[in-house]
Length: 324
Length: 310
Image 1: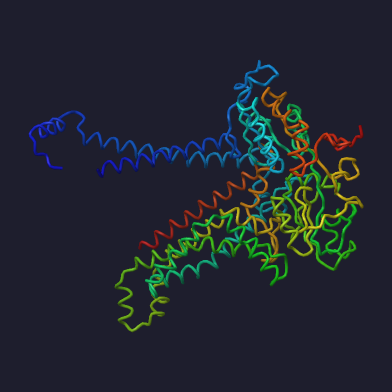
Image 2: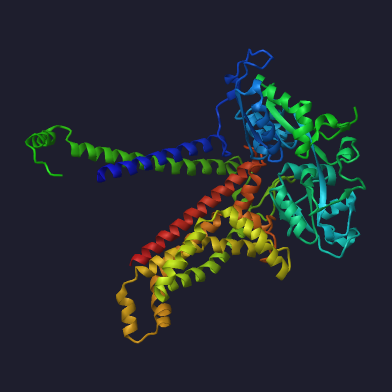
């Protein structure tokens, strides 16, 4: 009896050790804590000769990357999998950040890499070739507004003023026409896609993390801190705006959906879903579903994004805005 | 087990003279289990260490970064032109929060251990001990969120600054490492020979004299072991600290200024940097530094344990 229980305990220990070992190997494979299926799992699973009707489509899609885009992709994937003709397809969405998404789709570890910024902005210099292998699918637009604590007494900032604040030249709100209150910068980490967008388009230059500034990783925390901290300034996607923070006008233009679509308000970015080369049939079906008018007008709008079809202006990877 | 029937006795006798008797088979099975587990464990540990080391050495091996630039550089701007990777602010931040947290937790832990073992063992064991053990079970994100919602606004109201910084981080961490310090101190005081204490009382020493002149010095190596383990845990804690420290990569000039730690910068930037880039590899170097520091702490604990045994 006693011997049996010892054997039982040892079995559990053994199983646990096996499990621990297995997860470690997964980690070391991809370097980012994500499980790494070899090659492109869906390509082999999918019936490549499937007709466009979609009845025969089956397989798995793995999407990873941007935390800003994740809720939208997740919500759409739930709807997608509930559709009759796609119920044999299983979609998994993992967070991890834009950089991780681009790296993993480039390495063929995932089928779709979600990103807040163009691949060309991440893969630079020696890595520039890597961006060329990726195909961009722009699925939504997100606009970013500068926000401040409601008590600062300012409701409009020019590009120069914002630049001075975020580069530390102006440290008191009274210098930009507000209350006598020290400015507290609530920033995103220097590698964040949202911060890159804000720096490129609103400030026109990259900034350093200043002493005394606060860096937070999630938009929810940024909103909480800007709302609570006297003199705080930060920036948030439109979907995160509420009455606890004051959205500032940029160069006199309010950050509204209309101003973004007409190109009057310049601080906006595409949400990208990258594939390596042309997408496989099931990935293609999912991307088309994402871009369908139905989804664009329901989930995309509900998530605080702007449908890609509403945009009257377009922008390329080097930042040139065109008005087709 | 009594073997009365002749048939079973025969069977048992036959088993004993066979080449693979039952007791030997059991012995081998048991040994195989144990060895397999140990081998898997060793392989796991070494592959983790090997993986972090191989990733972490890449920036130095490729000549993109010099070790002294990483260890003593004061500027961390991975996205700058040119990028600079000075990890001194993070090393300083980690050291400040961990040692300050230990300085706060050590007296609290020791006093609660004295209370639980010497002053009121009944109340201590039924109320205080479960309460402290409960602290160990609270997830770190809960500590972080509580710190962000309570400690940071509190510090902002009563002190200059925004409330973020080393002080907020240390306060949160001190509560997190308190169970480690307290439970090791309690064990040390419990294992103290009763004769020592009785001898001290017999010589006319008061309870307080016995505690601070006899128990504290005698159990000091064990207490320090608890403190070092606490510091080690504080060094490795990421989430709770990241939420309250502010994450500005600068060597702070005061306890109330936004600062960063090794772990907070890794969690903030790992997801946003591209795998294989210098930035990403340098974050692995920071992970390697953390690993080496942990090894150092383990080494110190072993030294202290050796002293405690004498």
